[in-house]
Length: 388
Image (cartoon, rainbow, N blue to C red; front, top):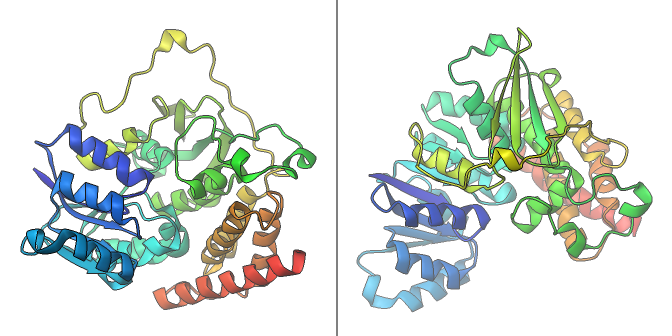
């Protein structure tokens, strides 16, 4: 039986993972759960899965949980709090697998803690790799930690390259649904409301990643993620719009043959693959009905209407702390958009201006990366003030 830790158990990825565990109780045991401040849902998860350890980033929420749990579970459940508590939970000794599913930059330190404990990690938190990919890969080799991608596209690439040498890979092609606004003009995008952007045509995801998908920033992050995970230069990483979201990514080899991974768009697929690796769970998701698929289409991205994707390539080329700045500026801009403080089309403007103000530093130390993150958040807030 595999004992698992879920960092971010109350989020979309975390909830999907627990649904999988519920259907395979004989294969998985939940050892650790962490959350931000959602006490109500975490309490329900504790009752359903009986973990050894839980942690809440919000210390007030942790105190509330402690009072609710009371003496009944005091001897069998350890409750940790704060960012240090989350990081400590990530290193829990009696856990075989860590699913890193905390959204945003907040997931970096816990993920690094798991890496330095030599864990096998299912990485759903792409922002951690965007911010500190070079450090994460270096540390994973040093501590013999294994990183398994949970993003559907990177899971697809990972599956396609099994048994092949990296030198045989000509390029990888990440597919993108195009989001809810594919084909719209800049003028039409200018009037987009948050509730419109949260209606993704294919995937059910959390708010931030849904907005990132609408701007194509999510795909940009995935380009950076692929750069680090598979050790490929940006010139070998392409993106195509694929509205059906059935082909999750492709690998083209030197002989020009391609291998692709296909399935219905359901995050339980890549989550279950990472959880059960190197085995596969039976019927993890519904199967494809090939006779009902009329066509599979692919087209180039529109960098004029959706420039965020190109910023990711710029960040890779600049190197150092620029990817961390890209990520932080995007988080600030997306939060501002969700609050109605800026227009949809101003998200890339804020990111670009923040990047333009940044002096790149070497990304050899985690504290330098975190300082770049802090700086970028402050600068992005200043940019927002200047355009309003």
